[in-house]
Amino acid sequence: MNRRPSETHESNDGFRSHPILSRIKVRLHNVLSETGQAFTLFFQTLVQIFRPPLQFDLLIKQLLLIGVNSLTVVMVAGFFTGMVLGVQGYIQLKPYAVEGSVARFVCVSVVKELGPLITAFVLAGRIGASITAELSTMKVTEQIDALEVMGTNPVKYLVVPRFLACTIMLPTLTIFSTFAGIGGGFTAVVTLFDVNGAFFLLEAQKNLYVGSVLISL
Image (cartoon, rainbow, N blue to C red; front, side, top):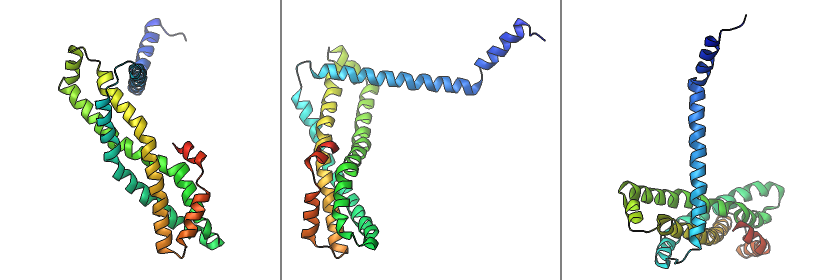
């Protein structure tokens, strides 16, 4: 039996106004909108980087805040990660009588995988939250609007120094985190197990390739 046009119209309206579909539509719209805004800000930042002048005073300030103030946290996290790797690696390799390879295990794991990962997590959590809170406060207190009124580009003044500082300090902190992790593995293995320290360092040096370090950066 054919439906009347009014019934079909009501059915379509009901389909469109379904609560689950409405939520999906709203969330999809929000995700796409935020993604577009993020890409727009990213490209604006890239453009402003190459437009003079580069404000070195703001860049140095952000390098200190992002890099120097995060160094202790990054190195502590890397050190204890290396200790865990050393202990667990030795325990797992001991039954196969290849515990001498624990230095290689720690070195390769920290350099290629966990060193950069730990650094990225620390910076994303610590610095990301700090930058978000700072810029949000400036937005609420209309400081960003004041910059625009004075003819200052907010992206150039606020975003570019932080972006460059993160780009510079992330590889730098990764290097410190990597060596702290190797040091943590060395400390744990030499202290807790019968492993010669000189042998550990020699094996670590053999497996510490420049290419691996560059890839991790």
